[in-house]
Amino acid sequence: MAGAHTLEFTDANFDETVLQSDQPVLVDFWAAWCGPCKALAPIVDELATEYEGKAKIGKVDTDANRDISVRFSVSAIPTVILFNKGEIIQKFVGLRGKKDFQVALDRLIGVPK
Image (tube, rainbow, N blue to C red):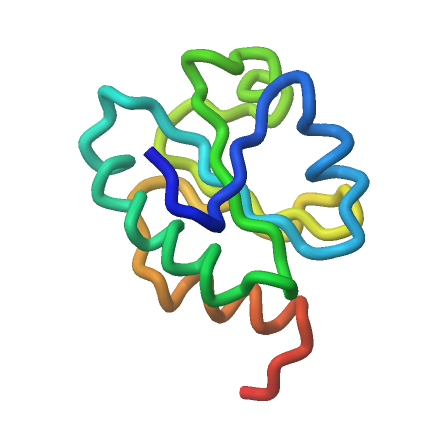
C-alpha cells in the first residue's frame, strides 16, 4: 500500500531511518482496515515523489508495529507525525489535505512562501 518513493518504517528500523535522519521525515501511521487511511495513501505517495531528496516520506503499519505506535502515543489513525533531527515538529490527527503537509515540510526545508 505504498508508492515507489514511499518508505516503510517499522519497529526495527524506525530509530535509524527516522530519528537519526539528516532530513525531515513525514510518517503516516495507518492500518489496512482504516478507510480514512486509504484516502490519505495517495497524498502520502504524491508527497514522497515530490519531496524525494529533500525529505523522507513513509508509513508505519500500526497493526504490525505496535511498539512504535505506542511510543509516539498514536491513539487514532490516520496520524501523521513530522520529525526533524529526531524531534516531533508537528502532529496531524485525522484525514488532512495535502496542502497542510506541504506547508509544514516547506517550512522545514526552507522553501520560500
